[in-house]
Image 1: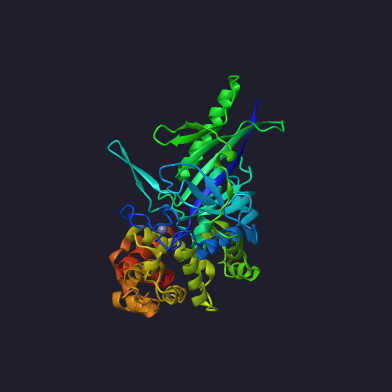
Image 2 (image 1 turned 120 degrees about the horizontal axis):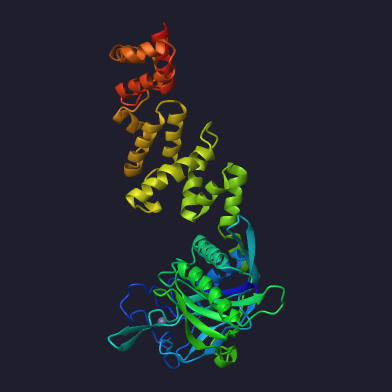
Length: 481
Ligand SMILES: [Zn+2]
């Protein structure tokens, strides 16, 4: 018996607005002393009334538009009732039948180099809960996170493997970071995933029983828990067992899914329209304005780099991976303008080569990079005009990276100018021939390979500054006469 995994995902994305979803408290809770960013609204005090955060709506629409969704002009918040110690109101304000965004899609790259479309069922906005902290057998509650705006993105069951799920959440993180609406840091809980997984027998139309895996808080745990759960269900079915509809968690240390609880239905939440909030009607002009102000998204950027800049797909993917890198790269391309010889491809080599290398080595952020775009253009021109050779250019770039100084100044200071004047090389070449009579004789006798050795000696004598082609030419002249 063979099976196809049928996977749908729910991803919660914490928005990085200044204030919370329904009150003026700071939405920043990471590393903040417990219960300091709270007020009667997010503490659920009787009589406190919520006010909708406009920026949170705007960010949710940005996500919806980036995911190619329809934006619904008429929206209603819903009350989702349940008891949990980190939920002071005894309910969560969410959206149910009328979410902000419906029916979109996102394209992911699959392992075999193809593109696959994952359909998005809905995107809605809700408020986060607080957090329980368990210390020495006691449970303490911290409500700094209670009421932080949280967007939920739900896919159709289009995902068929652990790798596709991984590619999807990675793409989603890239998108929210491009939009600047969330840090997307799974490790800090700014993105949290839930997976619905069932197995469909090959050739059958009927899906198996759905199992939910909750609270996945790293990209690795998304991939590993799905891979594990697929195998677990296959084994149960192979031994004649039945898959039960349950909610599982992922035990990172043991690398297994573990039973958390048997599933309750939506009816358990007794959803009803939130009586403390009016319906939310969106101005079409406002939606259009948000749409017009969206940044260029990674897929469009990558396509443009391929078409306009002549980069390979790999280069284009590296440079468009995150928005800051892409913007830096493009600023150099713009600075180069129509300068002959300073091509987007050459600039790509420097950015993804030396710049990335020094980033890793020096551990600095892109925002702190001191190399000005026009200085990188000037450096490339110095190489193109044979003023400096490639090793000298790398040395110069290292100083530019650390100091932000213009390249020519560094070249003069360090004496890196390439010797491209034959007259200047003649005495050096003559000395090298005098010092190496054996190899010189071999070259005269026609042993071409030894000429490279003599070129190396000239480079050494000039501390790397000789133009190697010119050194070879002068050597030939001096040896052959
Ligand atoms: Zn508050």
